[in-house]
Length: 334
Picture 1 (cartoon, rainbow, N blue to C red):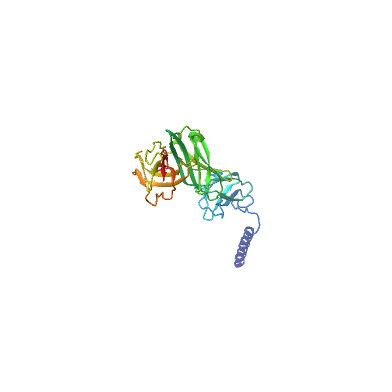
Picture 2 (cartoon, rainbow, N blue to C red):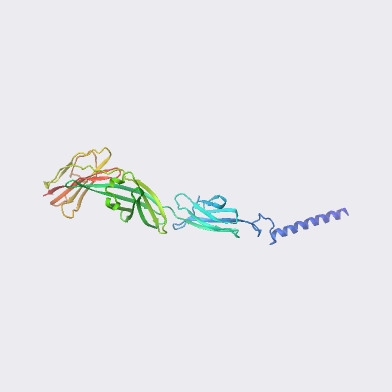
């Protein structure tokens, strides 16, 4: 009899376990409030993937994903995926941030939603590869000077969707567009002081000149800044040849020593002496210690210049590309 009662207890226990298991395994209502399958579950999940805007799209690892409502942070994995779970069902903003990419955000409504999937493409911030800003001063007869400001910016962009590039100086209210030079790959422009509402380019010395770009979507990126270091106004005094002096080849060009107190090199140019001068010779990198140069080398050869009238000028160019040009000196080749 005891044996029978024991067997019946075992049977009833097994039956109860089977019943409970059936409730768990079938489509019976979930009673655990922390069970995501419970229809009364009050927490949600945001998941998603973040890729590059540039094609072909690539996952971006290490993007900071910030759910502002609960002050929660996650980061994308090697596949660009992220997951933030156990969130109260509210509406709020989620933010995406990574160095060298523009930030983005999405407003998400979690009300009555257990899982929200987000797919985001981040735009790589254009990169300023090179930025050159310098002044140029031309000495003219009888005793005049003309100033110019040159701005050149080389920019790389993964999406290749730049629509415009500007140079700006808040202190001087300067906001000017740069134009792409397809041969050099630089966005550049040349400005006279009047173009910039200045009396002289000297007013820009030490001021910040920013480079800002816009992409096709109209988003602005400030990608770099530089300053004008100096203007060079001291004239270089030429010696010879000058005043339509007749010369024979080879020719020695000489000038007075230039001592500004900083590093520089000389550049010498020869032009046709005409209403529309045509540059024929351009010799760069002449040592700052030089006061003459002779046309007897492959780097400086005027044997191909026909007989006629010419003029020459000498430039001083510092390490920041700021420069000054002498007044022209004329000569005649027979």
